[in-house]
Length: 441
Image 1 (cartoon, one colour):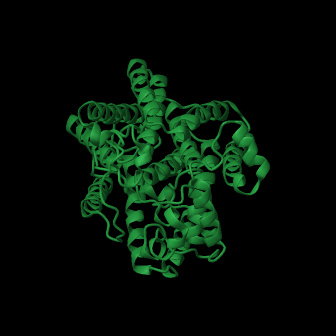
Image 2: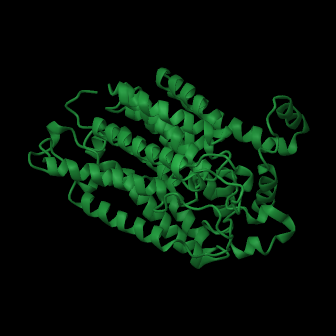
């Protein structure tokens, strides 16, 4: 890609009229505002406005969200919208694709038919705010080097805060035996994040950021980020993230090398499907259960199979529209209505995004959401565009998408309105922008 093109979130410089917003002659103040806005939004998304959260809070069933978090995200949305309004907002129209419209319309159906429509509706609107943030923040960096540098700054800030927290505030940075919900995680590092799973996912993304910076010529900074992220990832004791990191890197190397899109897409989807079949299949296949034991892999995946049995049974009861967008776990219906299920009824998610999405918006809705969030972005990755498959930033977003898809085999990332949803949507939107650069311009 010629360096005369700014990047996928901006017009080619030669095609943009002089003096328009986002031109090559951005003032120092304008660049500083772009940088501060992007870094601030990303830091807030990653910490959910609640850094170093205590994990020893008493368990309370409530449909009330955090006022600070909801207000914070709403303010971020307004600021980003105001900025984008003055910087070619029509570029966002490229994100409005038929599969997105169909997926959102089905979510509306699930809201209307939910067993708690008011709660489901509020959470759906909240999710739309997060999706909007994911789309708009991609337009803020000026070009790919600016984006990569900002990602490096965010990574270093969050890791510095996390390491300082582990050293000086261990009760708020390391899971303790006094934690109310999961005392068995005692000793696992979580740093500035609320849970060790969030910390491990962040460290994996930081490794991807380091690889991107290294490929763009920021070798020293890239290697420093990787060197800081890997030890922290190890001490989160997240076996899933530790296993997925090398798998994603290997698949991404193959994906950028293959010239046949069918092979690349098929390999990626087969990996996601295979991991799901192994995990969920262990419930029903004694042979697979024994094989996992022989490989020293916990065939229950630390108790997740009990949750998955519970989910599958309830998907069968409402297979078409589900129980409502983001209105199943942690509701009174489940916590108090299924006491005979023991601890399973009090978990905060299904620990499998694919099952969870079918549970909440039905099987048709799950199909549409997966097409939008996973399959369509993979097609976009191979679509002919100004940005080749081996471009470091494009590869960063492919790795982010693949990691989110694999992580969703053991965690719920599709409908939980949190940082992981933002990054999953962010990766898909980014690959869409890059695949449709001429239209976006």
